[in-house]
Length: 358
Image (cartoon, rainbow, N blue to C red; front, side, top):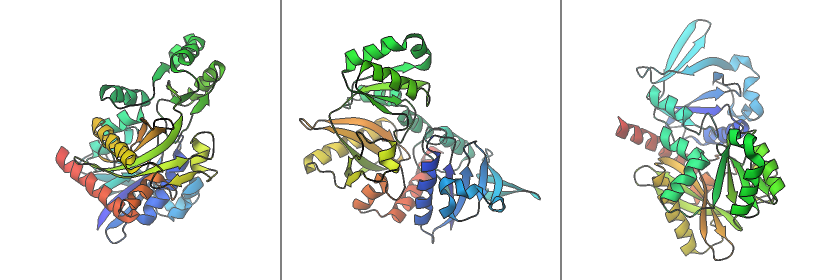
């Protein structure tokens, strides 16, 4: 039996979503093959080995009973290839065969945790340090799209420093060059955190101020008059695209509340587009996956224009949501890979990639 380390929580605006995803992952791990070891990261960045009920994770309930917690760290000594757990009697080392960092957003999905696990010599589920960082940063992702002729929205970006010097002029430039409405997004955030739709120059300026509370760089993209579809991709050197799903948001766009709170958004699997158009989405998803150097998994999101049905890339998520209502596991299940088997495959892909990198 293999020791599977599941890391949850994290110093991120998506901390609470990570807890929900982790519960679903833990509950679906093939128990006959893996021994689950839970490592929680608090909002302040403290790490604890958690030995309690996974059902207590949401709302940080796992932190309430101190008897279930032991301070722990990921060892950067490759001879350990695991974690170090501290107690009153000293410390113990636990060997880890594979890790699933169920961490969304900054300090987990952006290459930082991936870099630590690479130094530690622990195989981990998901993309490499480089591709995680590329996909997390919307400015870099848009650049990759430009270089690889992937259709996507017209865009501009600005740093906090430049916004403080000339924010009003930039808001005007966005309205003139991109048209209205536009979407204003922190360059490094997921789950639509910090995203606002702006319909006037004044709203652009206000949305920029809001986005800068989440990141020091912000992207502004033209509004695509269309609907969102998502494609699940799985694999290393020969990735394949699972099914394509369609989002019918309960709000004006698929924001944080529509994704996780009101539970009223409609999900259509497969997407309500022709088979030919779904195949086009799948082909573009795999192309972008490869262009960004992805491995393991990613959910690749697109907009399909209502007029003409043009397909435009929105973003890539290298650790997509794994909650009970998340698209990625549902899309893979529709493609014939149930949740438990999906986790097993992801762990195998992690080990396969590390063997190729040694």
